[in-house]
Image (tube, rainbow, N blue to C red; front, top):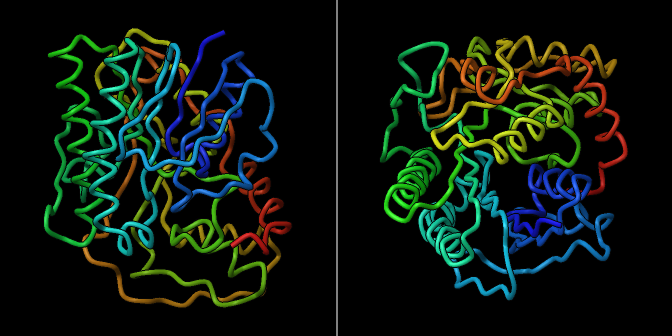
Length: 312
């Protein structure tokens, strides 16, 4: 039975990852300081093969016994979080990644870094492929997240090259699904939470900026395939279906049967104008591509949000 550590395992993606690993026969250790995670995301996982440790990953990590895999998902990941927690965001990208990689070296474990499409910044090429170096403002308000992840990637590759650690880097594009926080600042939970109570749905800018939204089941499948692969360079995982933010808002209003109208606010600083993954590498190396239609994923997410209004 593989023994696997997931940092940030009580978060939206981390909790789904813990659940998937358990189903694949792993013994799972979930580490989270609950700064943005939620213990309710993992309560149903408690059992013989699941252990929760409340700890900040930027502190020294001690775990007795062997560890086969480390998946580093600890980090604030929404605009509201990393704008309110800029220092913590930088620390978990730098110190947290360093501590997790040090454990991987000690245990001779395979290490997977949860990186992000934000390493591409406001891209000058479209769609974005893994060989694009990005267009990031290092001193802008979003820079704390973008540069934390870019540094984490650099550190991960340094451990791979210098210490021979088997490392993986997944660049995650916009993902959605159950267990997202209602008011975490990302588009889909914001639109759903407003639409369900017929409040105006807030769009920043004109809504012409594009995103590519992937349902979490597809993302978790791609991450697990990458974990078991022999590939060490970054891999984009996301849905290449591109749509405008306004189109997404209108789709959610329709699917919820809401009476909400659209309102428009100024665009945040350095907000990317376009975002679409080139997933050729994932197709060729992992034999992966998304299967869940955005509309079907939204229906499942909306159903979950209808019963989760008291969680935030």
